[in-house]
Length: 127
Image (tube, rainbow, N blue to C red; front, side, top):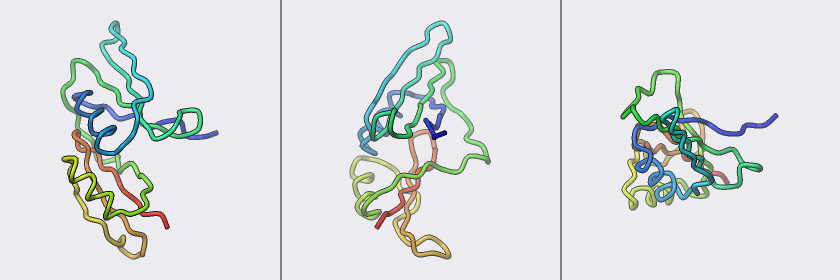
């Protein structure tokens, strides 16, 4: 078994696609509209779906926003340099919610950014 994707419901698909592709540097891998169901699925990621886990952005046409809920934590992305990654996100208009620094009770350098719908994304510095 392997992880295929994580699904997030988004209120405004184009805004979310812009964030994930332009701010975080992912690629739009595929997108399909389902007019009878009134929704669109868009898959974004850094690599091909056959080899990498990706994010599925689900846009229900009649819903503008969602409550994230208390059960969701975050999506984690590996980065070479968390401070530089924060600078890049900031320069592209992204929101930093925790600047790069060591995690509590540890030494791993992490940072957090937030997507347009309020989902948290952790940037984990890999050595």
